[in-house]
Length: 134
Image (cartoon, rainbow, N blue to C red; front, side, top):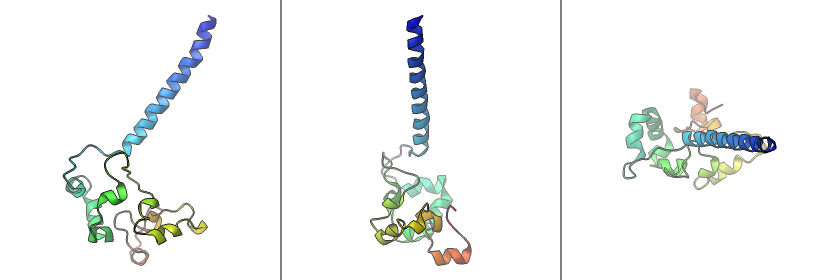
């Protein structure tokens, strides 16, 4: 009976940790990219899967300058992210990323003011009323 009392908490701990790992793995899977043919550009599939996103990208400055999806989102490997942070932008937009560190910008992201794929400048958004995630 004493052994049983010692074993039950251990078993419970293992079950809780296994469940937590399963939940966390499920969260990561939502942000993971499915396996694809690496010879096919992103926009070929995404024109069918998320056509509005592709159209927004083409209409924005990144599309106009042919900045490909992987620059912001990473490859389809372990560095893939659906929601890139500002550090993905620093290579081309170092000054803008630096402004994000100011206390005035606390809690904001690039997408607070810029639409995720169109990346309209502030003036255009003020005229149209389009905004980011806030």
